Image (cartoon, rainbow, N blue to C red):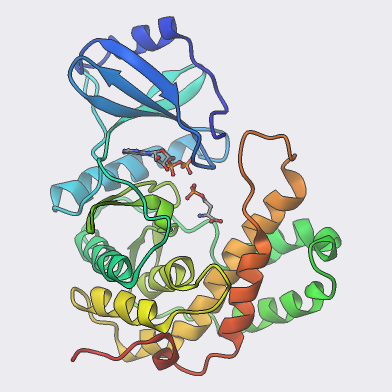
Length: 323
Ligand SMILES: Nc1ncnc2c1ncn2[C@@H]1O[C@H](COP(=O)(O)OP(=O)(O)O)[C@@H](O)[C@H]1O
Ligand SMILES: N[C@@H](CCOP(=O)(O)O)C(=O)O
């Protein structure tokens, strides 16, 4: 359960005095999530999400994350707004942690995403990319290609506990990705973690995007590649080309992908698979099994990585261009 820091009712009531959002009626920890402690909080006016930022989030990055959410909401991209305090600040301090209150977003994330969800996600991702072109703050991607080898070296000695024979193929991926990684594709602000649990739907309509805490400046097409992995594989590990087609169709209905982005897609998808494989592998080997968080299996992403090695062009993911 992702509540790393407990808070008492008294300290929460004192914290809420800085806001104009009503009187506390109830609050409870939210089990889902990996990085931060989240609470569902109800006042006599509304429901809110209270987030305490844990140690993997750098306090210096919070103005980027929260400012981005405000910027996007202002441009009609569906995402919850941070609530500002009476003094105008969006970031406070609670139980020794940086803390913020965020609007409660109605909806549920899809447990079994369908092609229709993929189309909506593609469209919302492209809207986010377009709307953030004039966002003034910048944040480098701390988990881009340059970070993968150091991350691998933290796990490589024990990697074969997860699957024998894996180390040599990962070494090979690292070399090929480091040598071939594109540098001159269109760049901007990317979400960088737009998995199904970060996209809410009300019936079949997308109600909003959450969890901008990996957002950063990077290649826009890399964000599409992250979604291709997160949304278009089935539970048995097979790639669903109909979902791939829907994701691309949704994306390019808002922002076309240029030839260089399309050509790079198999490599970007391979890099995206390696990035999530590496963070999952590290957590798998280091986070204790009785910890408060459900660890995600790295082997799922190892399978995706192997799949992308065999892809020759973006058409094999279902891309068919503008009809
Ligand atoms: N604005 C929001 N509205 C409604 N629920 C939210 C909101 N933000 C977070 N949640 C809930 O909290 C859970 C964890 O949030 P998330 O930002 O993904 O955490 P973490 O950054 O720790 O991974 C989500 O799965 C969702 O259930
Ligand atoms: N999406 C990542 C883990 C990050 O989790 P989140 O709860 O912050 O979305 C993965 O699946 O490895």
